[in-house]
Image (cartoon, rainbow, N blue to C red):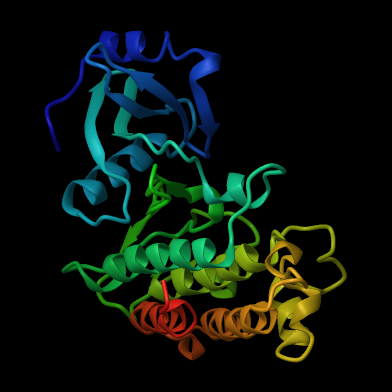
Amino acid sequence: MPQRIRYHDLQRATNGFGEANLLGVGSFSSVYNGTFTDGTVVAVKVFNLQIEGAFKSFDTECEILRSLRHRNLTKVISSCSNIDFRDLVLEYMPNGSLENWLYSHDRLLNLLQRLSIMIDVASAIEYLHHGYATPVVHCDLKPSNVLLDDAMVAHVCDFGIAKLVNAEDNAILTRTLATFGYIAPEYGSEGLVSTKCDVYSFGIVLMETFTRKRPTDDLFTAGLSLRGWIYDTYPHSLTHVIDATLLNPNEESLDKNVECVSLIMKLALDCSSELPEERINMKDALVTLQKIKKEFFSYL
């Protein structure tokens, strides 16, 4: 990791970690945007050391991000660490999170943009699982942890509860719980973490990205889940669940759009099977998405 930045430089860059610079708050940290005197804009992730697990979260993130390099992972520029302060200085993502885009009232993502973003996310997770000597399980994949740069390229962030496992099929036990709605059944009930947990979360994020419904939406009560909702409508009634902004009736591409999303939802269901051994792996998920993009958008 590059040379550490001094605390007072960070204070100056973030206006004293002021409210106006606050980008968001996570489980163990707050993220601020900062501008250094040379004009460099960064995101500064400050760990709340009062929260149990924050020191471990900082150490985990440092260890993992120090070793990993991929265009679809957030890049660490530096870190700052003293007795009562820990932070990471990260590359700034001017277009915010996938979550902000999905639920914004004035910004829309078209079908190709959503598909491209999910290919970026799949590339990042495939790299974590297969591109490194020890597989890394992100453990908290969700739209707020997918950040978009100025070219709308997606970067997966927040490795605060990530786990290293011995092999792709190995599972380890943990007491750290991720975000409700995205957790694989075996992770939520038994604390069993493996690469298949990320595959499950990826399937849920795929569904959310193309339906614009959170897994925690009020619609999902009395035993109905986002996955169950998709499963019940697949493949014949998908138009009832696809985000309406993707289904412009005046476009001659309407049928093609429905067919494209249908293939994506088939993949999402394959990723989010109840049993981990029935889920596909991220290599295959990435290849599938790339094939879908080639089939429907090869003219671009």
